[in-house]
Image (cartoon, rainbow, N blue to C red; front, side, top):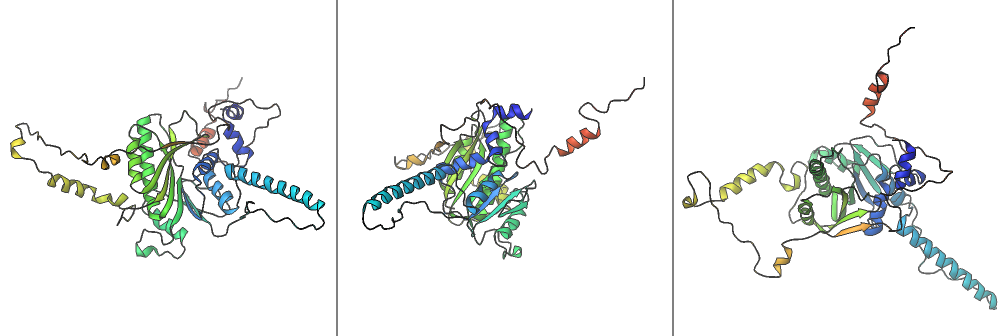
Amino acid sequence: MGKSSKDKRDAYYRLAKEQGWRARSAFKLLQLDEEFNLFENVTRVVDLCAAPGSWSQVLSRVLIKGEKFGRSAWQDREAKFRQDMLKVIRSDAEADSESVKEAPKPTNAPANDGPRQDVKIVSIDLQPISPLPGIITLRADITHPATVPLLLKALNPDYDADTMNQQAQHPVDLVISDGAPDVTGLHDLDIYVQSQLLFAALNLALCVLKPGGKFVAKIFRGRNVDLLYAQLKVFFEKVYVAKPRSSRASSVEAFIVCINFQPPEGFKASLEEPLGVGSRLPQMQAELQESTTAQDDDKKDDGIVDMEIEDLTPSDPKDQKSIRWVAPFVACGDLSAFDSDASYRLPDDHVSLDPVQPPTAPPYKRAIELRRANGGAYGKVPVTSK
């Protein structure tokens, strides 16, 4: 598909190149921040599945360079406008008076924080990531236990891997993940693979998040997604399902936003023991099976055992509120913004721009090289002499 047709189809694809973003997914994180204020009081961040680096680019420009986008930028413009108007009004009033005094600075003037020096951002992906200012990049597999020591070493140079401790000495404030598998078109399979990727990202986040931290990750909404929300509610006080405006409505993708990390008492995360179970799961299932006893009278000749299930419904109506919990669904982004599913007419003087950062090591690179070696899509054409 050519650039022109792609530009006409997707306005955010165009805007990403015009504003210097590596990918259109940068708008998704910016719109999530507008709704949930993710970057407030955040100095240490881990970006999982970061390639090509658009989310890390947002973190670099917002947290390190001090740039502002979206609602915060609009609020700053409004505050600056009010400040300028107050100066004009006061200067006119002072011109009429005999003694001219300097106008006091308004208390609601926007604070110019500027670049921050205490920010540490670590990005991880299997694919190489082109360098970004202030970003530490790691090429590693988030599903492998060996990634945890690498991450802890990047967060704290004094970390000693020989201690076998998989808990961060200086935890992070925010963990984000925009990773997704290569979709097959079989929705049930894609949703399952995505849930396993989210499971790995969550395990890694539990190793480095500090109490009160935040976790944001991409999910594919399916039939049993409510179970995922309930599992995340065990570790976080608030769990939201968010759909940014830059995410196509026709897509099953959404983003899970978890706020205020509160691990259960005595819980210690480790990739070798996922969510505290890991290799002990078969043993736990065997113990559960042994503890479940059935009466001999209930056993039939065909080997089927009739078991009586105890009613676990709380008798107190106050306790019945916790039987089922539904995660709130939030739409992020201004409704007047571009619709990611709509097509917009391009101006006559429009010039198609190249991507800000071409893929460093795309998975299709080898296939392209082989096709070129064979003479193109149709192979080498034999030369016939007349």
